[in-house]
Length: 302
Image (cartoon, rainbow, N blue to C red; front, top):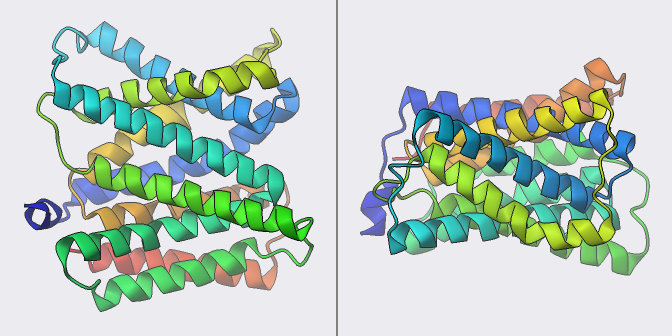
């Protein structure tokens, strides 16, 4: 039954993997911004490169280690990989479309902030059990922290653009929540590395036609190629391997909350490396967000 599959005792290894995934995702925003600026790429093209390169690196690793020979050819494996690829493509495409219509801060806050809410609600409905008080407090504190951390007094464009961007950001958050719920249950013969490799590759293939139409050429510059390689290898392939591995050992709500480390890490990196000023509200939001994540780790779901 589903309730037994979600009744997973969170392990220390699972928590460490989720923390690593969230932090590594946070470096991806900076790398993606640098790649888009240096190569003059559309955000959707950056997303396609991220998925294709991440999946490509993971597949190459499987090939060198012999993991491709033992890959089972079952319907369950095919369904899982197709679902992971489609959800990754939807998550990335809706997010970058929301960024184009609103702003990076508003789209990130809505996407990442809504994902744990979607997961908690879906888990409560499927398990027929209301979320625990620590879970509710963690989600509420995390959403409040994201609002303070990413708050911008400037407008986000016309009202219709703002509404469309918020709808797309919510769709992106729902896509990430669905990815978390769909991939939490193990499939025989399919580990976290294989799920990452073929899920990312499939998502990148789905985004490739739009990326080619918008322009996806990379200049033959060592710096640009190095940034692209880092974006595919570290905050994509390595981060999703860590996430799927931690997800198999943790409650899905806790896994979704770990994604909140992404905007926190990105904001801190921007403050340290780019000189961005968070201000009093921003630092209060960062502290509240970190406290909410800590509560979710110290009081894990069962």
